[in-house]
Image (cartoon, rainbow, N blue to C red):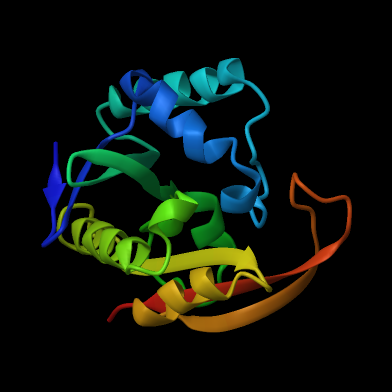
Length: 184
């Protein structure tokens, strides 16, 4: 499966992209606002990619993790996690469909070019049209302006500001924004 946009190709992420994934997943600047990154070792990245690959092989994956390619170079990833438990706990959900939780990461060399927005919009269209998801959430560190701007460009609205976020690269408690979009 591939998803193509004007400039990008999204391909299922897997172990074949270990080196290129580790390049951005281990970079401090690229990951400073991430909860589970940076990756400390190549083995840690490999373990993650093996789990992603196993999920892709399921009939109904619980999450979709795509590698983002620009001019045939792997520059990041975009993901959609489907969560029925979140749906049960969310007052705005009135059906039994899972909530889709977005995530993305772009190598710092490719920032400020609209790649995260373009990839997220493509994944959003796939989720709505192929998976029939109609409720989306996303979270980010409150200081990650670029990330919450992507959420806003997707039409999402800020619904919560939470304390106590712990990013892997920092010991401090941080603020987190939650954005949400319900279709229909």
